[in-house]
Length: 159
Ligand SMILES: NC(=O)c1ccc[n+]([C@@H]2O[C@H](COP(=O)([O-])OP(=O)(O)OC[C@H]3O[C@@H](n4cnc5c(N)ncnc54)[C@H](OP(=O)(O)O)[C@@H]3O)[C@@H](O)[C@H]2O)c1
Image (cartoon, rainbow, N blue to C red; front, side):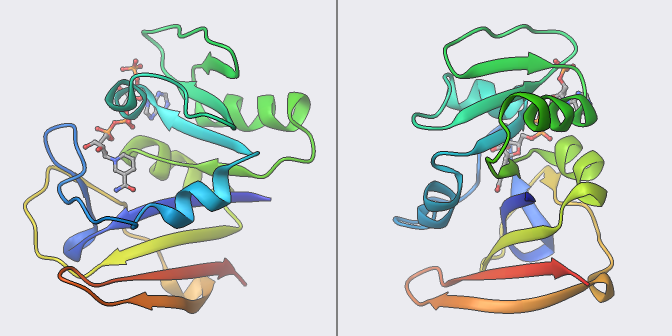
């Protein structure tokens, strides 16, 4: 399964100045649960933000300028190459396109499922999830979490 996983606020804001512009305790639970034991594909800046591969999963970094070599981590130069790598060398594992904007844009056509955390927040940002045609997908709301900043886990499945 090729999935895409993202959290966005109003206006599909995903980032600001190299960071995620909100901090909500527990919000990344679904990311952790889905990606553990599987493959994440991320852009060079997102990888730099974390600074090292996430534990208990395989990381494919997309970059044409850097070459990261760690245990459970390789670097390739396009999303297509990352998907080909996962298919060949990580068979049977789910693949999650994990951002940022360029990865989502190139990866969107390949994703069978979009795991989106809709964060109910107006916030300034400089990085956005691309516009996409919602009519191509079936949308389910899996969980609504109340709190100071409410958020919902939703899934879009390609029809
Ligand atoms: N809210 C969320 O769910 C979420 C998820 C991830 C990231 N973020 C946020 O998004 C921001 C980072 O995203 P970003 O878009 O600025 O950067 P990014 O996608 O993480 O990294 C950009 C770099 O990745 C490489 N790259 C990306 N797409 C590529 C493609 N299709 N083909 C080849 N190379 C590609 C290029 O590296 P080279 O320049 O080395 O060639 C590019 O400069 C941060 O603010 C981060 O916190 C939010």
